[in-house]
Image (cartoon, rainbow, N blue to C red; front, side):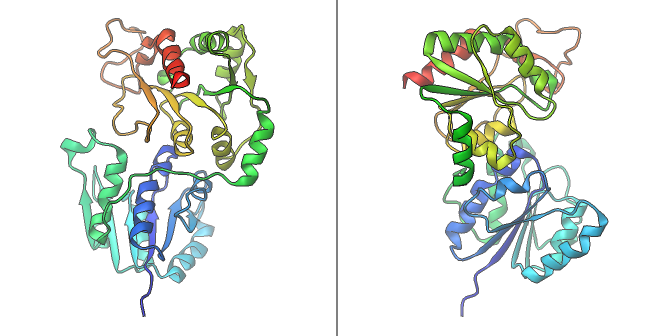
Length: 339
């Protein structure tokens, strides 16, 4: 009697990384249609994996010592046959070993934690690592498990209840643009005044209504955009979890954003994105799928945006994104609507 495999994929964080796990689960499902496919993620990101139709369940990484005994019992009861550790830290190596799975694969780039835990390890070639999508990095962990690569699809499916609620937030017909002006790095944020000018122009020239949304700590950018805009910009103030944000993003014709986790969520639900990048390498985390536009300034910058603050060579500490012009952004949005 055939016993379907039981596979655990470990990736603790971050938002974009969790979304881009999609092809790993898709290929596992295509190869083993009846398999049990579970994930381990931190509490903040676990809800998003529920929108991946190939994932059966997500185990939430314990937040404190008191949660570990129950977590370990779940690991042991699951009787996993395969573990793919895409983090390869001491903690995830411990989790991998505690499963007792016969096949335990480590994926590593910088260092290989506790190599004795694993039955196989895949090291990313340093010469190629920064020149390929992070998806290709993840997919390389499938070979030791004997799983062929047949798909690179990234797909999230919002829940019907969340879609219905999202539609109530954005009633009205016509072209709709979702603007998310936030970023984890203040150096990678386009000026609020530029976003305001884009809002005015797309309304005047394209008849599109802009809705702006921001996460915790990003409200100042929204306030500045609304203060500078001459057109009516609709603010979405509802407190949304990740599944609810995915459902909301799916209702728009386009999303304008920075290189960010929300960019990947929007792309995964099928919404075209116009994404603003600074000097960071766009290859590993470019939005996946057709119909997306990635805008980046000329590099090296012909004129430094902030010579007294920028740190050459450090993409987390320069303002190169400011050298993307309003005209380029508006042209990219117009091109989407003209298709």
